[in-house]
Length: 172
Image 1 (cartoon, rainbow, N blue to C red):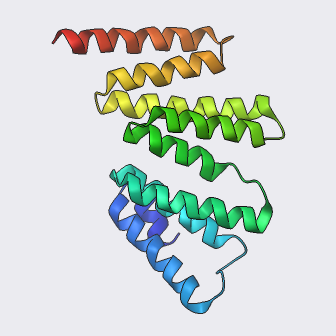
Image 2 (image 1 turned 180 degrees about the horizontal axis):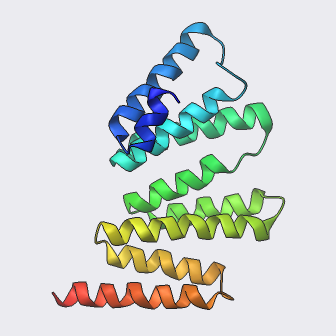
């Protein structure tokens, strides 16, 4: 396990971002990837670390770069697009996030499967937003999960729980 990976595992986000940055500089200096696709992987990993550290602009820059590079190497690769949507949502730009998620669904060869991935992103957003006491945003994210997984009764119950937390928070 590299120091960068240990930083991610230990939730030392700034350290992890710095270490992935070192790996990217090594690859750039040598004009070669450490292994096929490592540049994309390192950009995504650094972007995730920056996202978790609250550096939304840095995260978005890495996800945009990973998207451009992955499209050049392999064609459509949706992970950077989904992570971009997550970054925009956390930053407060829900409409931009929604557009990116729609683009991912439109570009996917399997819309049903992609909708499950998008629901998973919204689920992770809701959990993070509840922890940071952004209950209004968490409600919006949970509503999207229910919209995408309407057949799942447990998701409706979870939405109810977040709505109660939001109500309680507003009354404090």
